[in-house]
Amino acid sequence: MTQAKRARTEEPDAEVAGKAPPPREPFRWSKGFDMKDPRLRKAWEEDGYVLLKGVLQEDELERLEESIAADGGIISHAHGRDDGMGRQTRMALWNHPGEDVTGMIARVPKVAGVMAELLGGEVYHYHTKLMMKDARTGGAHLWHQDFGYWSNNGCLYPHMGTCFITMDRMDRENAGLEVLRGSHKLGLLQHHKTGAQAEADKTRMGWAMEAGLEHVHLEMEPGDALFFHCLTLHTSGQNHSDRRRWCFLIAYNRADNQPMIEHHHPRYTPLSPASDDAIRDTATPLVDPTGKDFMDPTDDKSVAKYAEHGFH
Image 1 (cartoon, rainbow, N blue to C red):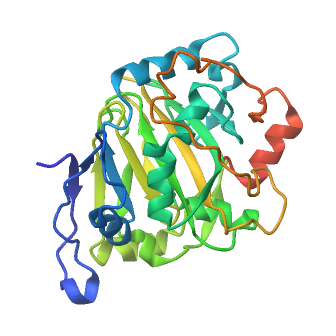
Image 2: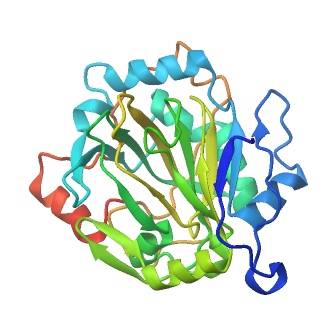
């Protein structure tokens, strides 16, 4: 069994209905990793995502945990997000990477560089989120495409993607991420607001599954990264387990996809690259909120702005 366990529907004709291609082995990060490997592009174009294992090493994850918990760290900016089914997921969101540990994660080549290769050009930081699905309380995220939110922000083209980094072991038991493999090829589905979330059209979702698109339940270890297209359909359930499931998500936009309107996330802002050792470098501060532009859960206007447009 590969790292991604798969649930299939009845198998229709492959040519007509888009039968899922054979399982794809994940990639593994190491020094000297070839970001221009054509297999990366092939996975991205066929599946709508790339699973890259071992992007953050143990010492880097430790620094991330320290930075989140430190005085003035990310936890102090967290707020609860209701899933409409009686549960909440805690979240912190900020618009600019900054100069601290969390900012370096968004700027290192093994994250930003990989995304630039996959999106086919220079990228900039659209925002970062820390999503905290705590044990026994973490809420669900409905089936959606990120571009279902971002297209409303004046982003014309789906030249956008997210790097989803797990901080804990993630599997079905603790409400791991689920994706519909190849669903980025469907184009943008209609989305309907459900509570504070946008939910993809259920009819077309059903058709996609009937047509044989593969429903993948991802299993990832701490430090693994999933790079996924902004049109890839994804979801996750409520966390009923005794294990937390935290993840660190960096959203990127291609530099030439300038949003047409001012909104609650940045327009093009050049992203200063960092070395791959910047996360573990002791010269990098654990916490420096300067210029990060957090969504402020104590500011009613800030919360209302995000609630109107979606917490994405």
